[in-house]
Length: 229
View 1 (tube, helix red, strand yellow):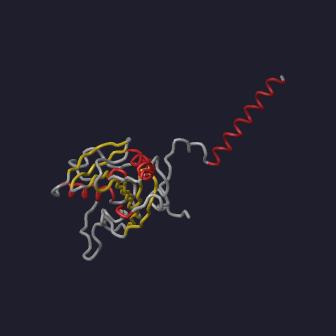
View 2 (cartoon, one colour):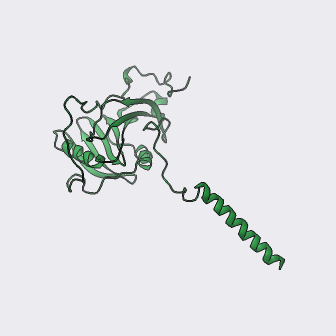
View 3 (cartoon, helix red, strand yellow):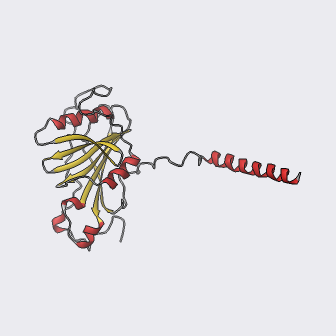
């Protein structure tokens, strides 16, 4: 009888713990995606990429009608190259995140932007997956980028002079901004939504070089992440 009572008591304790954990919302949290950064971009190291600059960008590249947005930029430097004092084009990567008030129209506007870019001379676009993130690679005119839409966001990773995009940076952002790009994004039917021309006088596309530091006068021994003394 005592063994039966002890077993019943143990089951009650286990059930109590499960109910308490469920009440806190911990159950189901495992395997969930990490939230996006408050200011859009990572302001710390990603793998061996050291964070070096944050900037809020005034101009919006992918404009969505009646859906205000803000754009944020982060610049990262490969740690080993910085320590050596020799930085090549592939040792620097920029990330742009555009955050909209709503998700309405973001996917459609992104697809239209990519298709317009594909028609411009000097650019080559192709659909791809990098570390499981469905995106479009943009190469040409001395630039290489990976671009995708997410719910209420557009993400762009790359820079000038690069030969590719770093998978660990794409993966980090893909976990926080899961891609909503469908297969056949460059040739299939346009996603649902309405189109309106950009109002006259509204800012046009931002300068993709905006967050790029002046590496000609850069001294890695003096550079420190923002916020450090």
